[in-house]
Image (cartoon, helix red, strand yellow):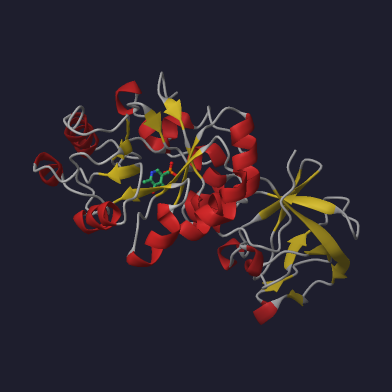
Length: 320
Ligand SMILES: *Cc1c(COP(=O)(O)O)cnc(C)c1O
């Protein structure tokens, strides 16, 4: 969908919670060459395995980053006149630059570019970031046009604007390089992509105990769930410390052999109760927890991004 542009990958926040190393390995094997992290600590964690790959650090160079950044094969994405000056003074090599075209988050202004701020700076990729790409907003075109106006104004070898939602806006948003994150991990940033993007991250938990709860008895903290009839209940080894938040209390679902098994009561820190009368649930069995990002985002009112990046360190990342 990026047309003739190269497709890079945002792997910040530990590959959106899925494990940056594993993500980079698989995407590199699939032909991806350009990766983006937020911080130098994230870059450092990936670094020994980035041979032949391009890694950009979106937060640029703070004073405390210069020492590490100058000798690094990763490139800072310079975000302000101060960062540009810092990079020049340090004798830094190739860099990327973020230009702010209206989001007013990070980036130098088009006016600063016109005034020569970037002259003779060795720029690999000139970037900007869309504020409203997941909506049909007039701002998208304004930002695209402002960015296109910078073409040929710097030494940049490539230009890059689109995140996941931006890729879906069409080829005239792709420029030379796109930077999806969310969509690579199964997130659906715009409704028209619902049939195109499949779930790729699945959640599973193991049954620690199965019990029969008698009619009138309750389950879990606060005794909030009360059995209307005798009910089989399975207790799973997952909880909000694993990122399966309390918003799933009484709302989440487990899936077993085609059966929907509802979460009952409050999610605990490490444990979860599901109603298991219909499924044939045994102790030690693994059950899938529904984690389709679009549906779960609607269920919990958490963004698809948050649902991914919260997946905790206790979960084992299994690649298939
Ligand atoms: C996080 C980020 C992306 C990826 O955004 P998605 O919405 O996850 O596709 C791209 N560019 C920048 C500058 C980012 O911060």
